[in-house]
Length: 74
Image (cartoon, rainbow, N blue to C red):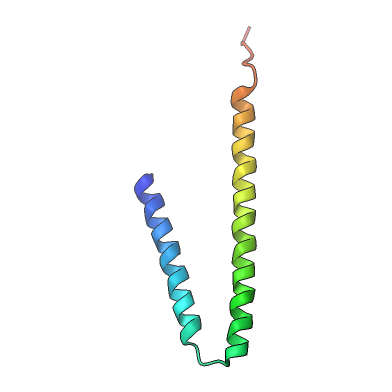
C-alpha cells in the first residue's frame, strides 16, 4: 500500500511540474499567462482544501465510531 501511495504521489507531483513547465513555455502574452496561472492556482488550492476537508470528515467519522461504546450481541 505504501509503495502504491508513493507512486501516486510521485505521479501527481510530476504531473504538476510538467503542467507548470508547459504553461511557462506556452506561447501566450505575459498578462494572459499570469491570469491563467492565478486561475489554475486558485482552482488547485480549492480542490486541495476540499480534499482535505473530505478526508478530515472521514477520519472524524472513523474516530467517532471507534470511540462509541461497543454493544454486546446478547
